[in-house]
Length: 125
Image (cartoon, rainbow, N blue to C red):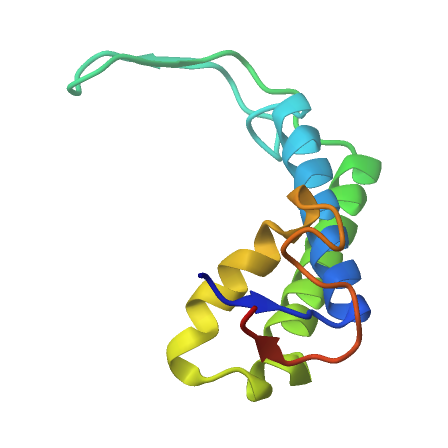
């Protein structure tokens, strides 16, 4: 049977917030014009596929600040999650699997495969 991990609650919360921040940033970037600075539109069909972009009004100062804020928070959370003390308690050979399970832990209700305690160590059922 696969190993399950008792991820500390702060690590789970950090990973969940990281998912949320990345989703918010992605949605914001999809809504914004394609260029930060105002630029004319263009069309280029000399390559292997045609590329077209409409004119871009650029981003407002508020939009730029919001993107920067989200990127900064994403970076803080990525550093927190990847540098968490929990990873030193997981065997090196198991860290990729554990990290993958943490990324998907929000999909599994606590108590069903992934623990929600502060024990912070792997166990096998």
